[in-house]
Amino acid sequence: QVQLVESGGGLAQPGGSLRLSCAASGRISTIHTMGWYRQAPGKQRELVATISTFGNTDYADSVKGRFTVSRDNVKNTVALQMNSLKPEDTAVYYCYDRWYNGDVYWGQGTQVTVSS
Image (cartoon, rainbow, N blue to C red; front, side):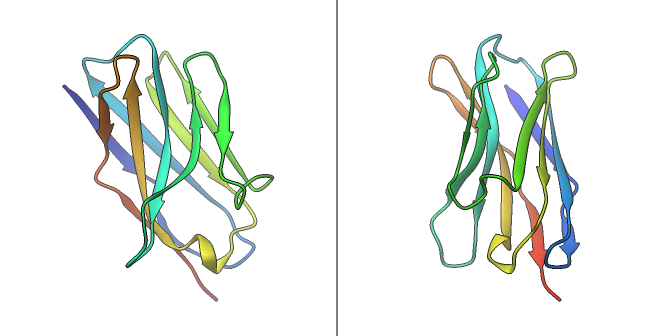
C-alpha cells in the first residue's frame, strides 16, 4: 500500500553531517506519523526521531540537539538532518510510516557509517 524509499546515507567523518530523505508513494494516510529508526549489527532496532502529521516530534535522547526531523506533507517526504555525527550513530537507518489505524510500513534501510 505504501512504498518508502530512503536516500542520503553514506560515510561521514565524526562531527560531520548527513541528510537522509524518505519519499512515500502509493496510498498514504492523511493522519500518520513518519520518522526514522536505526539498527546496528547485532542490536535492537531503536527509535531515532518521529514527527506526526501535526508536527509533534520525538527524539531519542542520544540524538537530541544533533538531529532534526522534518516533513513535507505536500511531497510526502520526511527528512533527517544529522549533525555532529558520532561513531555510535553508525547503523542502518530505516524510514517508517505509522498510520492512524496502527499499520506500520518500513523502508529498505540506508547505511550510515561514521568513521575517521
